Amino acid sequence: MEISPSASAVRWRKTMALVVEQGGGSDPAANAYIDLAYADAHHALRDRSGWAGSAETKAAAVLAATEYLDLSFRWRGERLIPGQPLGWPRRLARDDEGVVLAGVPAVLRLACAELAWRALSGPLLPDLAAGGRPVREKVGEVELAYAPGASALPRFPAIERLLAGLVRPPDPMERA
Image (cartoon, rainbow, N blue to C red):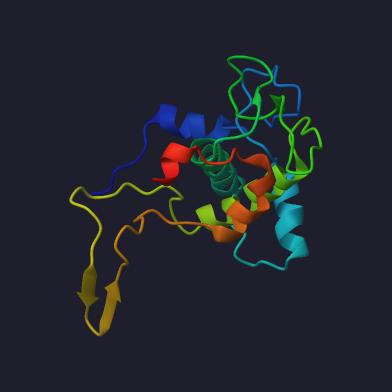
């Protein structure tokens, strides 16, 4: 049995638009840190054939990347405008060298493009089954073991390093 989307769902997908944060924080509809032109140019420069698909598919990947960034990191400073939809722009934010972080930092846009590419392969924040992390898993010839305390969520070390200057240091209590 084939399930077809409702007319309203199709209409929503066709009208789904990226509203890019331009750095002022005043657009209540802002939902992305980059547009498709930025993402296309970023991935073309790196000769990534995996950045493919319809404009709607790529837009969904950019939205997922933006959401991941704002849900996964504790940014320095505070939102420029209370109630703005995205985490950036910020005020009172400085990098490790004391430079004021104004608007939407270029490194954040770069990270968004990188995560959008990864989002085409699957969810960046997948739902996890209850019951803890597996210690050992065997499927056919392949066997995986996880270190105690290892997170079951995917990590993106390159993204974490890119954004290190934008992220608040951990609270002392979080290290315990």
